[in-house]
Each structure stands twice: as structure tokens, then as C-alpha cells.
Amino acid sequence: MKLLEDRIRQDGLVLPGDVLKVDAFLNHQVDPELMQAMGEEFGRLFKDEHITKVLTVESSGIAPAIMTALALKVPMIFARKHKSLTLTDNLYTAQVYSYTKRVNNDISIDKRFVDDNDRVLIIDDFLANGQAVKGLMEICQAANVEIGGVGVVIEKSFQKGHQMVLDAGIHLEALASVASLADNQVTFVDEL
Ligand code: G4P
Ligand code: NA
Ligand code: NA
Image (cartoon, rainbow, N blue to C red):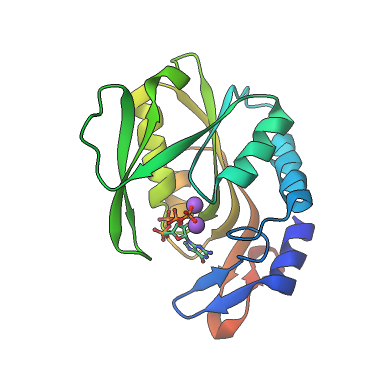
């Protein structure tokens, strides 16, 4: 998506450790018009997938997920993060390991908000190692719902998550695919 690639070039910062900082429009300050355009793009890309719900994880997934849900005219659910869960009877849960923060989090959604007729679209801000998306996929499996696709705003295609989603046979769309962050330079897959 050209609008997003231009914005990354303009406001993105490459940090050591292959981290792309985009807190000027996505992870801290949020640009609503850009979010809306991205939601409409996800809506277009997944229009034939018969999506009944959009699923993400707090906090940075919420902005793109809500705009996607608006475009598809379906509800959005965000999984909540917890240090570790004790009472889980009413919840679908999964464990997510963050490589960048080196912590385990449990994520969960309330069983009331999905049923086995649902076909879910997973949306997130970043696809890096894929741990967050994997956790959301596990929640879908536990809830016995179909996954109609995974949409991420930015994927770092050189990390493990991209292949993990494809290996699961899931329809994957990234609005910006970053091939490399070497030498403090953002190189997109479509300019290789
Ligand atoms: P993964 O979910 O793909 O496995 O991500 P990983 O464990 O590698 O990273 C942990 C957190 O860092 C995730 O956010 C992920 O979205 C984010 N992240 C990964 N790579 C980048 C990057 O290059 N730039 C930025 N800005 N973020 C990145 P989180 O901990 O779930 O936080 P939240 O922001 O959703 O609260
Ligand atoms: Na995220
Ligand atoms: Na994040």
C-alpha cells in the first residue's frame, strides 16, 4: 500500500536490532485517516472471505482492527494481555512469548464473544516472529472458529512469522512488507 510505504519512509525510524519504530502514526500517536484507509484496504483484500468477526490483541492492534471491522461491518474483539491467568473457565487463552520484551504473556478472550459459526479475520500491527498471531490462531482453534485470514499492517518478511502463517495455509495480507532494515534503511519487498 503506497500511502503506508510513503508514511514509513517519512516518519519511520530504524532502531538497532531490526526494529522499525512507527510510533508517530501507529504505535503511540495514531493517524485516524491512515487507519481508515488501511481498514478499507483490508476490507477490500478480505471481502470474499465471509468474515464475521475481526480479532486482534491489545494494544497496538486495536486501531487497525477497529477500522477493518468498520469496513467489513462486523464486530471487533481484542484479546486482553495478562501476566498470568488463574481463573480461565470463561476464557479462551493462549500463551504469547515476546522476543523483543523477553516475557511471556497470557492472552484471552471471553467465550461469550465467539461461537463456532464465526469466521475470523486476525489483524495486527506487526508480524515479526509471529508469536502474537500464533496465540490468536490458538485461541481460534480452542474456540473452534475458522480463520478467514491474517492481515498485518507491517510485516518484516525476513523474520519467522510470515512463513509460519503461510505454512498454516492461511490467507495472509501485509499492507507493507519490509524485506530488510539493514544499514538503517527500510527496503520494501516490492522494490527488490
Ligand atoms: P511477534 O508477535 O511477531 O512475535 O513479535 P515479537 O515477539 O517479535 O515482538 C513483540 C512486540 O514487538 C509486539 O508488540 C510486536 O508487534 C512488536 N514488534 C515486533 N517487531 C517490531 C518492529 O519492528 N517495530 C515495532 N514498532 N514493533 C515491533 P506487543 O508487545 O504485542 O505490543 P503492543 O504494541 O501491541 O502493545
Ligand atoms: Na501488536
Ligand atoms: Na506492538
